[in-house]
Length: 151
Image 1 (cartoon, rainbow, N blue to C red):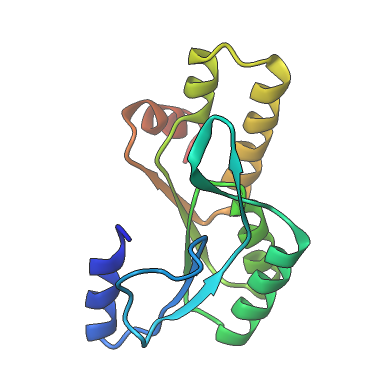
Image 2: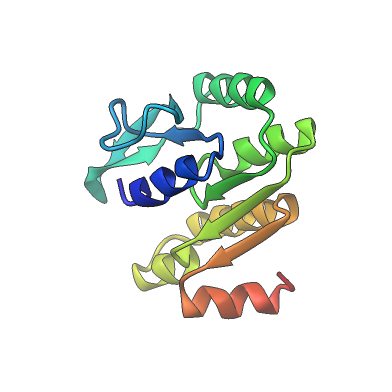
């Protein structure tokens, strides 16, 4: 829903849009936008929030949609689907950019997460950095981290 205004603007500018979402019936999107709903789940730490569910069904939807649509570029947000999108985009030679809004390592450290959890997130972030053509963030701490890593 928070991207609805920019979607309308891009459609007015005659851009063709393929939107992947966790919403089964997204509100306020123009009919011209192609919308693909991916699988989601709920987790105890965010009981009211849909979270990306990385599964084979979603991967197939991503593959088929991107192969058919052949976008000039793909934008992803940092979540459990990032690596799926990156794999498909790199295979199909589609440039991919990402935006990261939360420094997950900082969040995990704040909540005294297990070392294994931190290691898994570090590994996923590393894979994202390697597979994205560019990335951005709204978090000052994450900006410093990205800059330190040369991104």
